[in-house]
Image (cartoon, rainbow, N blue to C red; front, side):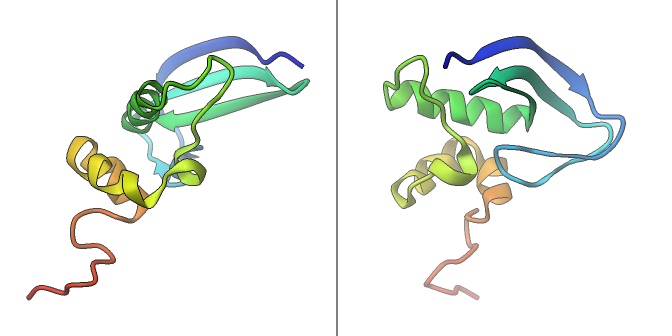
Length: 109
């Protein structure tokens, strides 16, 4: 079954939402992207931080995925992706829980 995007737009949150990429809050006043679509025959809405969207798009291009393949940051990040994300999208790394110093095996004072 074909996925169909109905609307894709950027908004400023008036109330709290959850980012579908990182599972962290989208707080009131933050910009986010909202995509309304039909996925596998069911309508739905996908909301994400703009930085999470940009990171996922860049990873999608780097991995040379096909047009119908997607990346969900909370599910598709591999440990070898952590360093690149920390360098290119530190806020996304923080939201996903592997920012510099988080979970490090070498606890520096």
